Image (tube, rainbow, N blue to C red):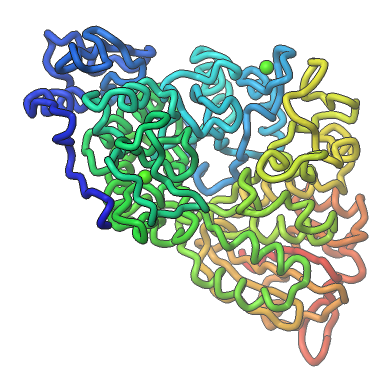
Length: 603
Ligand SMILES: [Ca+2]
Ligand SMILES: [Ca+2]
């Protein structure tokens, strides 16, 4: 704290006249009056605006120079064609660079994604989260943004993006995009100006100070970076990387500028945002740079603005305290870091995970406030599910059923549904971000027609394509599809009140009810057949098994279950699942090892 200067808005170091400061703030919010030439509400074009900088003789920004992502953007809601329920259904997290290449340059793009929408619809996906699609410095994951309103050149154009929105919505699929709210790229024109000129009007957009502050350590580095080589007088704050300078979130202009970015995309029909790294917005000192209270006030304002639009969605990445950020006075939704690892341990049969998992399920907030996942694009959240489970497909199928038939909004990480492993010869984050495997034709597996993809494929690519698994009703892909469809069909799974949850031996069971729909979910997390005795099977109507999956389940049974949406109970229930009465003194079933299933108890 001693080295960290608390800043309240406009820096006196800029020498920027107060009236101009007020004007820029006003401009960002409303425009500085018609004579300024600001088109305050023209938002459907890639609006650019001239910023006449103050003190232009000593500022790096010349009169009339342009930041293409600086103009204010008004509120113009095109409305939503999607049904309200999509926010409770299954998302697919897509890394566009790795999804499908449409033009043979070895890099995935928006047209490739458009070509993949039929597949996503077949799978039952109701929303996409696209990792950053805006222009970036990194030319890879996209989290170093150099223009918040232009499409990454490798991915295509704004016209391609508009086409994606149109085509996705036509299939009932929402499009949610990443918004990087904590930092820009070092190549963002605003930062380049701020870095090179202590009197830049953009200096107050970032966090600068005159001393190096050696006591700070974040992720193993000092986050205060030298603004110019050899300079010992200017340091800027960048926790993640020198290429990611952080915005000054004490400057209220930041909120207005970011809200304008969001309106730019919302006005085009985007269905919402995943906000990146929100735990890092505000820093208060060398020991107080994470999860600061100010973050919640900022996010609540973002949430209020997005809620002006019809049927939109907001979710935050807050690794340390998801529940706090999922609260109504903060972001309102957050990713359930911590849930996926518990599910994976339980699915492997790790008994020490059973009770913590039960507690987690018992305490989960309703209304989709938590976004669940097994893994994502970041190595800190775990390796590819395939690798974490050592390719154990029984555990894999159990884990999928445990989170897809549960409260929260589930996010499948692209390629998870076909069991992709980490990348051949890769480690860390790149290993998790390999090209999608569409067919079995090596060496490009339908991803691209290029001579070479931008990155190696997963080690198990040859065995795990979409095409080959589509032909096999017992495949992992069909299992995911069955779960996704069941979730959409039985709303009590995602939104029902929890009536009970418990674990007995290796059997995890829970009940949910929504309206008259009363469901019982059963999982056998062990490797032995277990009896399940419950009075629930005594209800007046005969309980109907509406979903089942276990090792050795016949393809015929799977087809009957999923194509006809229910067993003909008298004819096709496998022997192990026939009601056994009495069983240990009560009504019950023998539950096979690795079983996941759902009974409809009522109606
Ligand atoms: Ca391409
Ligand atoms: Ca920050």
